[in-house]
Amino acid sequence: MNAAKNNSVKVALPKKRKIASLDKKKARSGWLFVLPFVVGFVLVYLPIIIDSIRYSFGEINAADGTLKFVGMQNYSNALLTKVGDNYFTDVLIQGLKQLVVDIPFIVLFSLFIALILNQKIIGRAAFRAIFFVPVILTTGLIAQIDANNALLNYMGSEQGIDTGAAADSSATTQILSVMDLQALFQNMAVGKGILTYVADAVNNIFDIVNRCGVQMLIFLAGLQSISPAIYESCQIDGASGWETFWKVTLPMVSPMILVNTIYTVIDAFTSSSNKVMTYIDSVYNGTAVAHGRELSSAMSWMYFLVVIAVIAAVAGLLSAFVFYQKRD
Image (cartoon, rainbow, N blue to C red):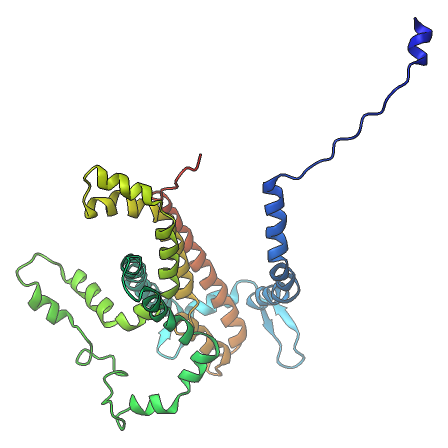
């Protein structure tokens, strides 16, 4: 028996070939897609970031160009140094106040426009393009050309056709003032703070509309991803359009509200017209303050930490109300 066992032929079974799962294939494709950005970030942006951190904790010697470590001195000087008529903290607080006014109106207005353009109307594609055109015209090279447009500057000056109403931000030339709202809501128990908030938003309506293009497209994508069967069920149950919006449409697009809010916050913080960005740029290029480059680096990193804190607060607050549809 033992000899028979020893003489038996052993057949080698073929090895099972490992097949990558669909998730792993998607992960590989994703990394391949972002590989150019990763390579560019490591080779180009990362050294710049490291140098910026070094400059924020150092002081450049004008004689030989060497960098001397000074600790937190640049950060304290950035908070205590007055450039022009404002301190860095004053400009930062003004920027945060403007953010509180702009962000809710941009998100709500873009959702409102997306709901309208999602309806079956004639020329829907043309209207979508019209609302997205400002995104193209206010970015990149076109924005620089527009900023240097002598004709528009002349028309906006006192010598042009316009008397300066577009350039003057005084109370007499604004679209709506707090006094107008008080006269309108004099019989309502509305506080002056709300009136000021609404007046600032209305007076800033041009900028709000220009910054709604990307958010509108994201909301449109979210609205079109909702299954029509859900709306048909609501109609069968006798739900009104108002009830359908609050109980179906709004929860289904709540992830897009979170994405658009974070995108709008980042876009507002990094805009070239942002007061804080303009202030930091003036410190970097100006000669009124000693060691402006080091101070601007310190201001930039403090501003970066404030941006991260605001984004974390907004994401944490809105995440509690976000509804994610289960696709089982």
